[in-house]
Length: 274
Image 1 (cartoon, rainbow, N blue to C red):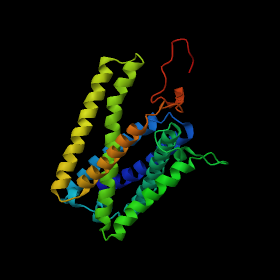
Image 2 (tube, rainbow, N blue to C red):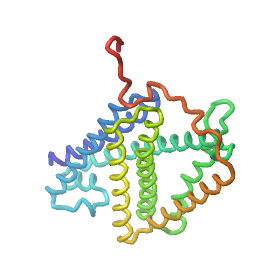
Image 3 (cartoon, rainbow, N blue to C red):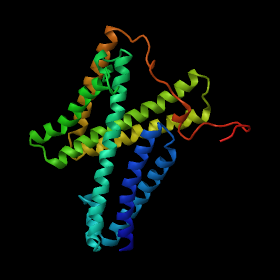
């Protein structure tokens, strides 16, 4: 019972920490390394305690539709399961807002740089928000899952499909950054062998993990792989069409990195005060 109670409490705390981490980074514009490390550590601890909880009950974690609620009910602490549900829902909302904000910023910058249509770079006259990017991205984000449900897709299958595609997009983006970072550092003369090795190893590991997931997922009969390939093909076709028309004169002209945005802070000299 102690294991289950700790599991449920940790999941609740993880959700809260994740919300705080996102809010803190959004307000400060950086300095979120401590919150991120704490969230990662709690995620790992929550996963381990859930495995331990199912080992005690003899259940199968992989087949569980709602692990936290099942564990809480099995050990007579069902009330904590409800509390965890609220925390998970709030965390999901925070992550959705954060992802939508990041997407709108990228579309806004690409619109301003001429990579995408200029209207994506429009901002609200009063509030300065990227209304052009939001007007395009929000309907897609909201209507895609609703369209799946309208087509008669089971809600769990629809969730699996959207999560799979979203996860694939994130992992692909991370892998691309791992490859691009050494190239960028080499261009500015700051590349070191250690950084290059770590970056390319991480890119390879992410790619292997993504391939392994979709191989197993496709074997189970999920259409996520084929949907992802169709979307990737359509995106590639648009990129090729865009490059044939005209190449952007300059990309990244609206990026203004500051010291506060550096993960982990900026190294200070011996004579500098904190």
